[in-house]
Image: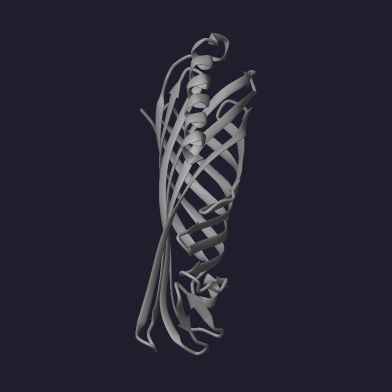
Length: 268
């Protein structure tokens, strides 16, 4: 099933690329590339459940482990234009750590963590995102685009029971193809108002179960400061509900990450 989705996504990207080549009316005057570095002041709400064999895990919030909900994330991105097509490649990694006395019983990876146990825990999320935006409608003040892409997320979680002297670890990967739309409005000569919304829903029932619900919305204002420099401020909101079950083991995550960001663009 994943192979079929990957082939479909590849065919869609190729078709869009050929469409962009054969539609000169949508092409930009010149091709360009930009590098972006941004700081995302994020706030997280995450629930996690990890099972092992026939032992079902407990759904719990990472806040139960004393993890801070807020973190500043560094995002690195390369943006390349080719006519009416724009390719974006970005990477970011965030990590939350906690050290607390838990106030509830938790079963994680088949191990029991009892109320009042002191736990040292961490949760890491590494994201690589590749997307293609094709301009499908262009006027002097507005650009409307179709977005397709793939988000590859790696999860890693660990809970060390300081009181009991035991540790459990679990990791999972979530490749998420997505589709959506983008809109940019030119306000004056040096200011752009923009937004993007993407979504994906996929469910497959069988021996191995993968369920993914993914939504992402962005809004921003960009200020151009000459030919090579631009500044952007915006708001980023992402929702992921992911479930994977293989050979009796299960990994579930329900996650909301949101917050404002500031970015600098350098053109070359």
